[in-house]
Length: 132
Image 1: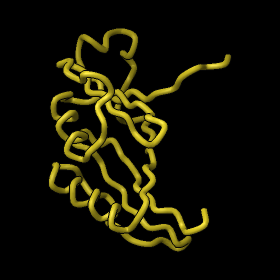
Image 2: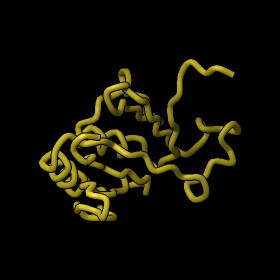
Image 3: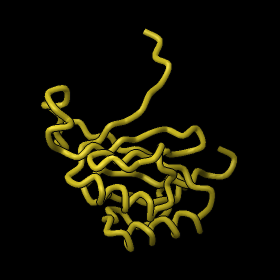
């Protein structure tokens, strides 16, 4: 199989809350983004799309086995500077997200932090070492 596109789908309790959260963080909406049960945003320079589907009838049987407990993926968002890392960490806090790991430099020299959105979906924000 040669897939022409890839995107991610997350299950959330409230699509409007997700829409507000990711808008406050400054991510670009994917399309009009006004469906009551779907919030969709573009991430990164290649506009990787993540859909946030509100739990309920619209998800339907196709995603009936979908849970937020067993097969979660943590996406990494690259940062361009320490200032950008700190700015996003502050936006997460102001937008009712949860900082799981405060901004710091790890043993390998990477600077970043880990946060969760209001539904517990995790993201790692990472400033790569110079030259990488």
